[in-house]
Amino acid sequence: MQLKKMTKPVMMVEVGPAIGTALFHEVNETMAVKKIACIGGGSLFFISAIGGLANASGLDGSELVLYDLDHEKSRCMAATGQRLFAEAGVTFRIRAANQLADALENADFVLASIGGTGVSSAKGVYGSYYHGSDMYIPGKYGIHQVVGDTGGPAAMMMAFRTIPAYYQICKEMERYCPKAIFINHSNPMAVLCKALLKNTGIKVIGLCHGVQIGIRSAAELLDVPVGELECVWVGTNHYYWFTRVSHRGQDVTAELLRRVAATGGGPGTALASKLSQIYGHTIVYRDDNHIFEFYPFATQLDPADPTDRYGFARSAMHYGYDMKNLIMPAKSDYVMKNESKDYQDYQAILDRAHMSQFKPGEETESMAELMSAIANGKRSVCIVNVPNNGSIPNLPADAIVEIEAVTDSQGVRNLYMDQAPAHLKGILEKRFVWHDLVADAAVKGDRNLALQALLLDEMAIMPDKAEAMLNELLLASRDLLPQFTF
Image (tube, helix red, strand yellow):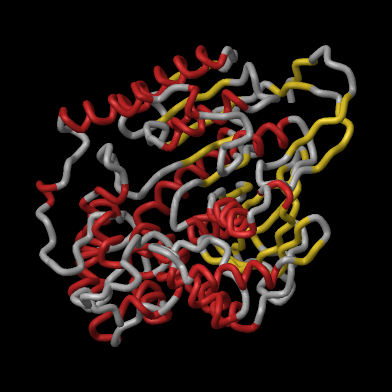
C-alpha cells in the first residue's frame, strides 16, 4: 500500500457514517493513494460517488478509472468528475478506459453500478424496455409489481441479466486485481452479492441507503438528532425491523412504535405502519414500494380499486408501469441510448452537477468513507450487505444480510446485531432460499431452478401459468441472457 504521509500530529478523529455510529480512536492521519475502478462508469450514480470522494478525507491523490459499455458516457462522466474535483480543490486523477482490463489492472477497489439492461438509456433501468417487459408480462398473469428490483419476477429477471456481466468482471478481477474489494450498488442487492460470493474468490460488499433513511426517519418521529440514536435492526436488503432503539441511554423502542402507530402512515408508508402495529416491531425502511415485494399482495392487488389506499398503482406509474393498461409498449417507444435527445438529457444532468450539492459527511451510503477507512486501516462502523456469519445468530451463516460492521485494512468484519423475531425469521429464511435459487439459476442458465424460484416467491402463481410466464420473460430479454438456451 502506497501511503502519502501527512504532517498533522496524532489527534482524536471521528470516523463512521453520519447516522451517529461513530468510533473515536487515536490515529496517525495518513492518506492512501489508491486506484478505484468504476464499472458502469457512465451511470448517473457516479455523480454522487464522485461528490462523496471529493468530500472524503484520506484518498486525495487517488486515481479513478471509469469503464462503461457506452464509452461516450464514461468520457462525459470523467469530464464531469474533473470539473467537480477542481471545484473541491482535491487532486484526484480521473479518466475513462476503453478496455475493462485497463480499468481493473492493479485496482484496489472496484465500484459497480450496472442495471442489467446492457447499454441502457439515460433514463436508466426503470425506463428501459427490459424492465418494462419484467413488469408488463407478469401483469398479464395477475402479478402487479411496483418497483420490481428486490423480489418477484422482475427482480429475478434483473438478476439474470446482471449476474453474467458481474461474473465476468469478477473473473477478470481474479486475473488483474485479485485482492481488490468489489463494492456493489445495484439491485437485486442480496442476489448479486450471493452469486458473486458463491462463484468467485473476490471480496464483495454491497451498499444501500435503506437503513440510513430508516434511522433518519425514526429520529424525525422521535424529534431527536439522528446522531444521538443507537439502533439495532435485523433483516436483509430493503426489509429490516428495529429490535432496539435507544436515545441517551433510554430505551425508546416502544415510544417509536407508538409514534409510528399514531401517524397511521402517510403516502408511501401506510403498509409499513400497519405491519409494524401488527407485529409489534417498527419496520426500519418504511417504503411500502419495497416492503410490498416481501408479501403475497402483488397477486391480490386490484388496480381498479378506487380507494387505492396504499397508492401502489400511482407508485407503479412513477416507475413506468401502468397497472390499469397492460399493453406492453413497443420496444421502439423506449428512449434508447443512440438517440441524440437521450445524450442531450444525459449531458444536461451532468452539467447541473456541482459540489454545492454534496456536503461533507452527508453521503447517504458512505461509500467514500468506507473506502477511505479500509485504505487507511481505520476502524469505522459502517452499514453493509455481507454474509451473516453469526451477526443474527438464528439465521443462516451464509445469508446476505444488511448489518453494521467495522472496517480494517482487510475490509469489514461483522458486528453482532440481535436474534430475528419469529415472524421475521420465517419470512427471511424463505427469502434466503429464493436468493440462492435465483443466483444459481442465473449462473447456470437453469430454467428449472428459475421456475422453482418463481414458485417459492411470495408472488407465486399456479405452476403451469408460472412456466408460461417464465418463457415469455426469458424471450423478452433473450439478447442479454447468454447463459440460457433458446
